[in-house]
Image (cartoon, rainbow, N blue to C red; front, side, top):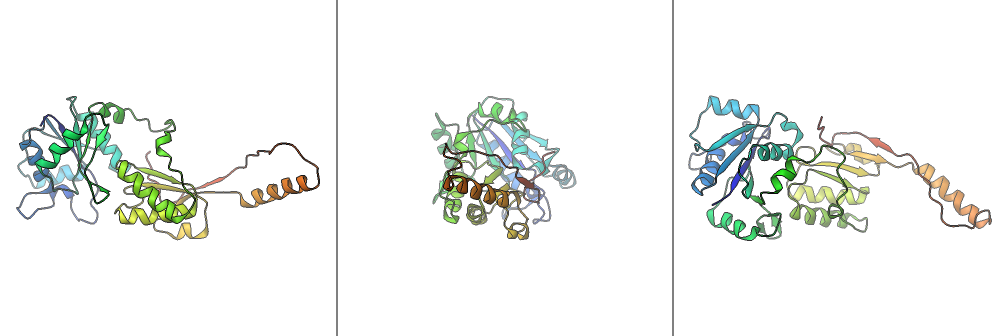
Length: 284
């Protein structure tokens, strides 16, 4: 199997009580042993495991046999999220081969699936398994995606129209848009929701996808009704100057009714307020 693999295992594993890479399967193998051994037996040229310092210390304290070709890479900033680990893994890849990205949380894998993904890749940037409408793991990417991932800037990214999902401002819209977008973009790390009703739908979808705000995905909402700060975690929001909007709307309407103004529609820009809470991961 002419390919490489990046195993993502740099999460903090607070709920597991120990690094997930060391969790045991029924056959006695750890999650990391099982995945690394599978990809080695399948003929992967490179096996990169991205871990954190705690995981590295665990492997020193509890050494387990791993394939010779595995390369352990420490993510120095695991708090920056999954995409940072993907970047670390891509930087460690030396061969220009299709590469799998496999979460340590999903230790089940079989040769038939990986071969199907390799056969399906062809002209796509990436492919992933889908079951009953839900995307799964691993994800397989073209070799050229490695450099694109590494070179992504921390700021000033151009606006990508494919990342904009249009809707009708309803809870249902937010729910279906989130489910659909994640299915096609499983590596997404941040979202901007354009009003609070859409946000409610997004939150429902995230719950069903077993994604947690901040740990798995950052979220900012536009509009700041009082309950936003009561959510767990409280959502970072852009607060609109509602009173000023209402004032100018009434002013423009009265100008029209009194014939003070009969020209084209006017545009004014008002200052909004960014309220920082706990739904956005700090990348600095």
